[in-house]
Image (tube, rainbow, N blue to C red; front, side, top):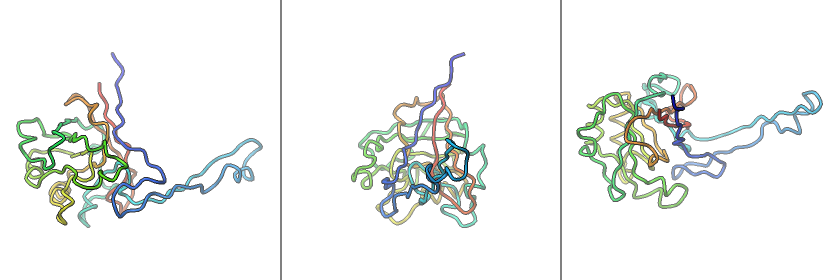
Length: 220
């Protein structure tokens, strides 16, 4: 039986990363340096303890219902069957398509799937063009996806919603239905259309509706 292939779909986080305009880069530093740890351990035994301060919307992250709704599930409230080994469907859209409507998803086996939209926008990651004029999912498409029974929507771009508007209908519709959202994915062009599972698990943190994940696909 051939070994499974794992595809990393998440960006690397470092101390200079700006993920979302207006939000700070993470602060990554030492809490205990190796040199200082010598005082606590046997000779030639050292340890490093790191410290990180970041906003939830950093790198590749997962949006849970609490991100949009005060009474929604936070990262501690979502269950593993919502996050791990979800049957995946990767949908490719033309590079010129900005508004991704319901016609893109029509006729596809969506029920129970993690639907990942490959726009190619991740090619602009860590450049100024990434932050504006990005592809987005329309409100009509969000309603279609909700009614089709998907479990998660992912995109390799800046936001599933159109950020030119102050409204966020896709977040409202999907998170309101308990459907999770993964943003800032990458390497979706490597995936097949189907025949893989998708996993994106954040830590269990009370009061956090968004948090970075190590998102990946498993191809059997």
